[in-house]
Length: 445
Image (cartoon, rainbow, N blue to C red; front, side):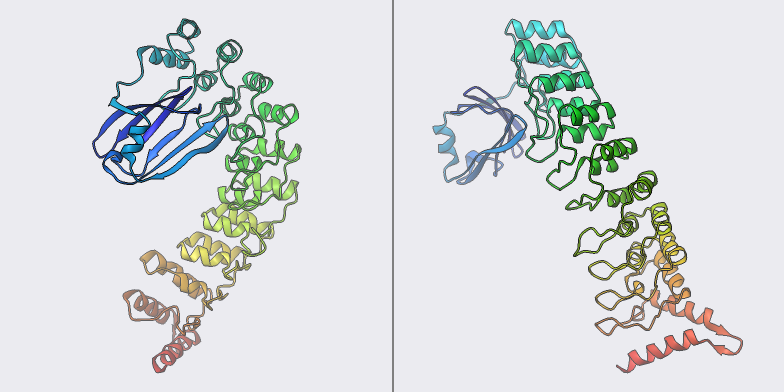
């Protein structure tokens, strides 16, 4: 059973949906503390019919998500009964609440004032997506309605449906500078966020330069704030392909070498996105190291990233800027291994022909890129290409296997290819002779 609960003072009004029954219920009971916009869940589909259930109440209090209660109970029915919970069919929002939400969404300030001032509807109501009235009017861009709700009604400027979805986050992403200023001046949080996703991230995502400047210069937003993954606003700007935002953040002090848990430095993000303008700016203007490692243990480079995400133009650009095509990661796998694994012939050609990648480099298992080739028709072209470029088919890995073990149709096709291209007027070439010798050696072992 899953529930979305709205707390009003000490009264819980819970909307519950039972998947097993396909029905909605309204649950009411008393509670000791006021909590806004939580989710209330049971681990069983029909909690009243079970002997055990885990009850969780997670609430969003201002901009911070926190766990209100976790309890394993043996008698869920008794727990609910003792809590004085009543269950009855849910009839949905009241007409007044529906009108209030509609007024907020349509920017009808007259209707909104009437419903609130005549106490026909609660100004703390939320819509089906848990958006508050303030967030709804922020999205609509009505400064007058925002001012009314904050100054006259006194709604909480930091009430949020999620840790990254406060009214200020919405205003920042939408580029509503006047509303951003007003919310900040009336107590909106700038740098506080449990998961680190501050409003500056939202402004960057929207590419709103004036909001970015205001948040940093006036509101003193941390330009190098990090979220739970270690991502900074600069990473966000790059991953959102916002070149001007990138330049502005760097001008304001953003660290171009800040590493994240998952995305590496900003150059890694640019390589992943294949954004040549941002890559050029970071390398040429900010002089970032084209061969920077994601960390000291993994040895993964921006070129690895560009190859992994199939960004051919980024691969070409990085090679021209001096990327080491033979740099192995922590498994000694060069970018060529990944291109072969992903059957990306265009990138394989680029690495070999433009980057002079070593087709016989070996990883920690003593395998060459040839070992990573698949066995589909598309892989056959890559295998043929590698052999043409000098890949040694006789190399054995640490299991004493070659890349072309067995007698599958695929292996037979490769052998036929080697034989056909190796035959000359005066007999068999050194290439095929070497391959034949390796096959005989395997047969004897």
